[in-house]
Amino acid sequence: MAGELERVRKALRELGKSLASLRGDLSPQSVHKLRTASRRVEAVAVVLETAHPKKSRRLVKAIEPVRKAAGEVRNMDVLLAIARKLARDCAGESLARLLAHLETARQQHAGKLARVLERRSKTVLEDLKEYSRFVSSALKHAGSSTKADQNQEKIHAAAMDVIRELGGWQPFDAENLHGFRLKVKELRYTLQLDEDADAGLLEALGDVQRRIGDWHDWLQFKEIAHQVLALEPDQPLLDRIDKTARRRFDRALAAANALRGRYLNMPPAIGV
Image (cartoon, rainbow, N blue to C red; front, side):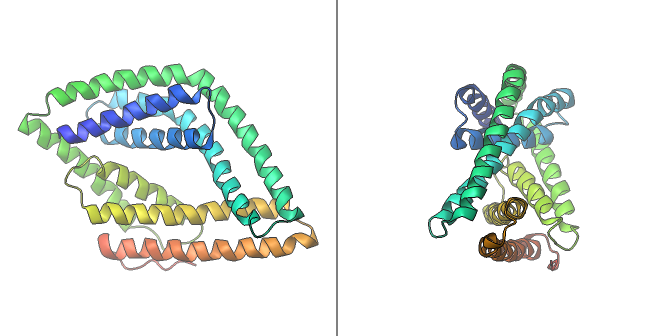
């Protein structure tokens, strides 16, 4: 269990560093690091909640507004990256208007994130330090075989809860596939605390997470494009975006069904 606790401490340190460095840097890379570190620490706190529920819940509550604000900025960064990639071979007035809209939205969300960080960073850093002390104390006792077995059981129990939820998922569609991805991500972060986790399963979870995430990014891009672009000359760009989003959905669906069949002992949930 010592290895698992060391990984917990690493996740806590990474979030602390991200918070400290982000105050003067809202670059796409820094925001992405903050969002990823926040989600990983939240998953850790959920797994360890039975050991210290009050501290775990307080930490998750402190992180949530920061993670959500960072997520809004990160979403705009991803959509801007998609638009700029399209611009390489699909330049035009329609795409220029869409890019301008996304850049304005990014500025607005970045301003909100800056305000959230100003209000919340100190509290989150203090809670991270306190939680780190709790983890360090647990690490000192990790050599006890009884304690190690108990901690390992907590990880396994948390993972099995998520696996059961994934196994009972309704047939996939555009409404629930992203929710499936969030649960896949939760399971992946949980299993990363386990030194004996199945490497094949972790790889499969990562693949599903990436493919559904890619589709969801294109879905958001498509929805915004249809809101911003309404003129007749915009239709060729909208058609291209629609087709790409559908292809990404088909790939995400295939990956999710492969995961269900291979690791969750469930028949494919054919989506529409």
